[in-house]
Length: 253
Image 1 (tube, rainbow, N blue to C red):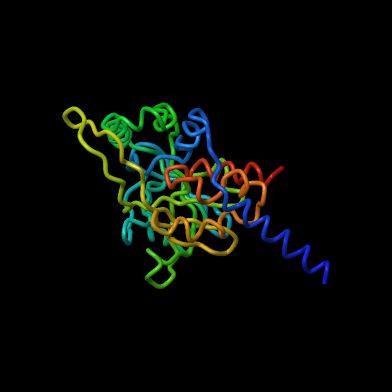
Image 2: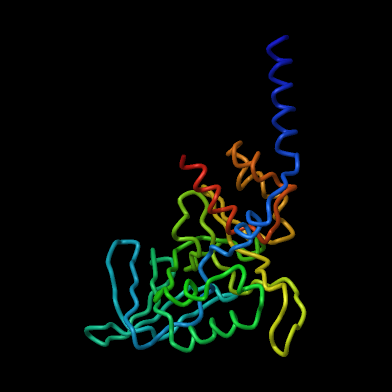
């Protein structure tokens, strides 16, 4: 009985620790608000060679021609072979990874989006947005918006540097939080993406801002140290990229 009582007490204390609110310094909050994910896919270049890696291990290089998508998620990619100039089309179900080079116009669009929101100056670095030449897509079987039958798509992986436990994929149709006009087209506040596709273990889900609290334990609850330092009641959806990165870092220790 004593052992059971002690176990119950420990459980209650642990739950209470996770429920307590943590106060962060201004500097800590500034870091937590930083956006560590890659930027959304801006458009592909037809002048640079892209790479397709099939599930059988074969590699195909060619110039981007066209993509077919469902709710902006890729289910087919067409290229012109860089050596033979022969047109080739690959269905997502046969592709393991895809690397598309960004177009010059796409980069210009990214810069324009960056410049029109003051919040970006505080949470993102323009160099990080434009420096990567290619965008990486990975085959995933997902239910679009958790409503449709699972289908294989080539989804943009936006945390390639820290995807060891949690993989985050771009939702091309994600809405953004609202801000208000400051000067002309420049917006003050808002601009935070409100949804992503997130995979942990074998489970992949469409994660919305409104469902963040409900899925917090699933995403991070298996790391008590992380949960004590970043309890659900102390964090915000705007910290999501930081939280995924920090959770990965703390879980590897």
